Image (tube, rainbow, N blue to C red; front, side, top):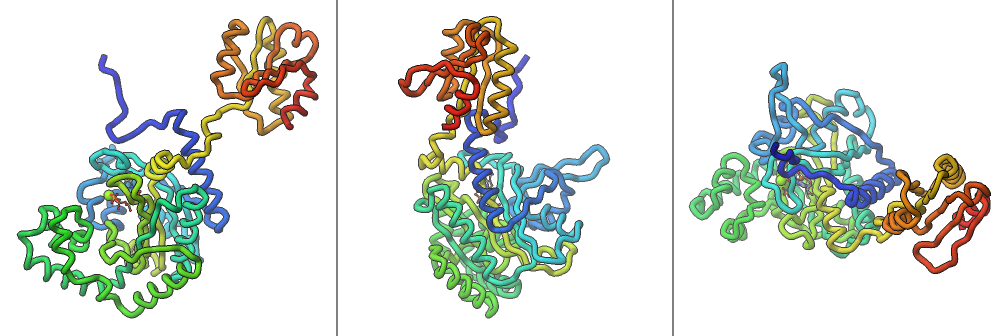
Length: 420
Ligand code: ATP
Ligand code: MG
């Protein structure tokens, strides 16, 4: 029989890899709690309409990246490609928008893309969505918070913030017309994707990877010249707040983001240490979306952070704490007819020392073979119970990572030693 394999672009996370993920997840959830953000969990599967309406028909995601199928009753459903649409739906459905909300989520997202380093078909995002706050202060808060995250992870030297404003709807229309006017005159010089986007989603052309298209864009009209007064003030104030907080950024007038719902502030945190897939965290303001989805007009701002890319970056930069590789502190070796004494001793140690990661040997075997396993387990201590120890109610402790002599101790003395 042919061996079954996971679907292309959907990775298993193996036990060696999960400590890095747990570290990132714990760091993020603690940080978010420190800023007063609360977790929301929404379903992985939603009505297809949710995404075509929220993300936008003409976006890459909706045009070609969604996992969409009919369920058994014939309804079209989609595995979520991003987290904002579901969060907005849930916030409206459960009436959360009567007051400001600072929310976060973590989980898998699904996009049918060409798998490569840092680009998967099932990937994971941490996301933040804030509802009901319209000022630049909250934009600044989430950027200051993200900057703290990079510091805490020890990677701030390797990641930079790019910032732009997309203005209000009217200024985007005006800019769009000017851009289409300019690019239409040079249509033949555009790459194929950009030619298609010229009608469907011209702002995305600014994002083109084609060198020739980028060359053409150097003389194109600039989005920032079309900004409305309110968006200009918003951006200026945000810049002042970031300056005061010493969060460095670059203004990138070509930064547009690939989803339709953004307006005013947009940003990306970008690194050079990942090759082509350099955007680790991206987001912006989407003041129109809640109303567009049937809720009361509610300003909103948020971001999504790609966890695969962040973990790759931490690995590449050696930013993962060395202690992550260590899975247990102690390994209990039980030799002879001592199983019940060993199990009881292990439970007693776990009662006394809740932080102790104690792996108890199972399956018997010689002293030598068990000690080999103890050594491989990465534990600092082997705790040994043989027939003598069992008879005397003692445990022998052997130090696996130093040359301290071994000791045979009563349980109380062993607990005291492990505490120290
Ligand atoms: P890209 O330009 O790299 O395709 P995007 O604009 O489609 O990114 P967003 O929808 O803004 O990405 O998602 C936010 C973050 O999620 C990205 O910055 C990235 O870190 C991560 N991400 C997006 N798509 C993938 C993917 N297919 N595999 C892994 N991570 C992804
Ligand atoms: Mg994409």
